[in-house]
Length: 225
Image (cartoon, rainbow, N blue to C red):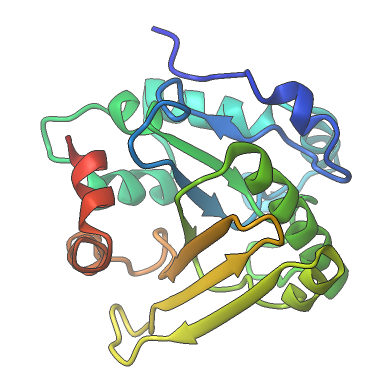
């Protein structure tokens, strides 16, 4: 069963500094709600150690992200993917039902050498420029950032005439305050987004399902079907 879509690849090739093609589910383009889910970064690791070979493979393989998601669908994935799926899927649903509906890629364009490391300011600025170009191509209706290490360098969007706003919610879930923001493009396109707790770190799928279902019930209902 083919559940990915490559129709945007020729446009992705024109995005400066975009290392990997985003995953685009086969039903994403025709979905009633186009949902983009962002991971933070890939890691150039072999077991627990930095691997130059893995780093080089990551940099050179534009299908790297898609390969990981395909492996997740077929064999199960890391906690990031497992708990992300549990946030939206009923127990009797299959992983391919979820991934066929959404778009996804990792924000930082250079693989990280350490899991606990923070991306540099320049990496974040490059990532925001790529993000602005990618969303103009695939036009999601909503974006969910998994994790909250994204805001550094956001002011680089001024160079693209994109206005932005971000605010915290008052409540805490898993000791994290969710965030809500919007991007407004000069052509009138508007992208609302949420930033939630990272799904691989002391994460409760049910609590975050309840939060997102309260905020964007039509999106959660669509992904739950």
